Image (tube, rainbow, N blue to C red; front, side):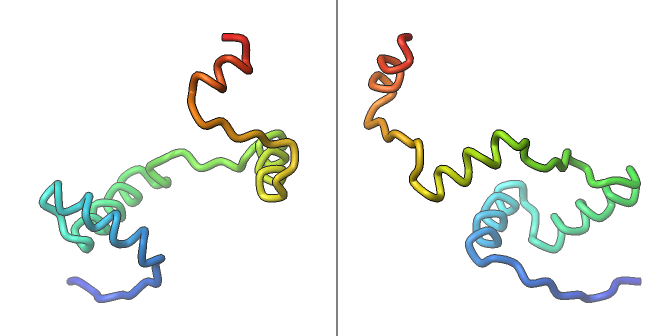
Length: 84
């Protein structure tokens, strides 16, 4: 027996995911059913979930505040600054 459900998802993520699913010949519903089957089979989320480290959180805050950041126009500029 199948049931129908609805979820609210971000439009951009939905469209990007739907495009990828179609390349596998899957509908959005097919992909959701595969995900749910994998969860049921493994009794777990089928990918790693983790929280960012304190260092990463600090860097994210700095980026959002434009604090202690530097923009490079090319990879070579970055490498030169790093001494590589």
